[in-house]
Image 1 (cartoon, rainbow, N blue to C red):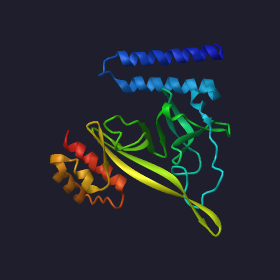
Image 2: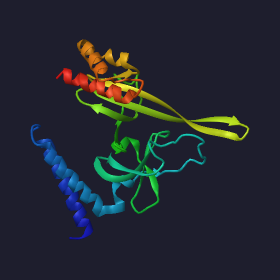
Image 3: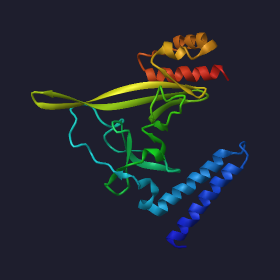
Image 4: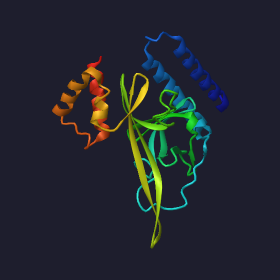
Amino acid sequence: MNRFTRIYCIVFCLTALRSVSFAQDQTADTSVRQSAIRNAEAYYHKVIGGQSRLYNGSEYVPYPFALNEGSHFFMSDSLLRGTVSYDGMYFEDVPMMFDMVKDQLVVQQVGNFFRIYLVNEKLSEFTIAGHTFVRIVPDSLNARVMSTGFYDRLYQGKTGVYMRTQKMIQEATNNDGIKRTINQVVRYYVLKDGKFHPVKNEKSVLALMGDQKKEVRQYLRKNKIRYKKNRANAIARTVAYYDQLIK
């Protein structure tokens, strides 16, 4: 079997698997089916190598200046390995960097120094350094409180918690010239009943808890969960406990 025949067979199998997944009853064992799909996709990427449709973005051009303080990227200025859901396909062990100034995911093909940024409209989700980012395009119900972009999913149950970090380059002139530093804004959202609610502190989160507010507050005190110490963790744990109460 030649190279192109193998590719055709793999693509055919992937299409068939996905078609079956939609046709089967919703109560079927989806984990086995999804595992089969991902294994087939992984082999597909191995066969086609550099022609993989993951690497069809535009060249990523580095910034023409150095920063005096801070970083454009999430967690590290070096490549980190993670997973990507892109253009309807799932990719594992991808070398990547997340530019939080441009809101772009930068990937590098294995064995190649050429880096590209992926097309945001085709990028639905990626994981990096243990964090899962999802692209959210707000509908008319949520467009007034949030903008399109990549959100760090801190918790997802019946209710969800998302964090948006936006970095900006701030310039200031001094005797040594131009000083460039990174300034960032972090916003938190609780997704409840299809609506995203901006939250800032314990009070704003508890306001969404309804009749469970008293029990949730007791839980926070008993477990010494402090919003000032780690806001992201505190919001996620608050909402997770709330979900337990409303089961």
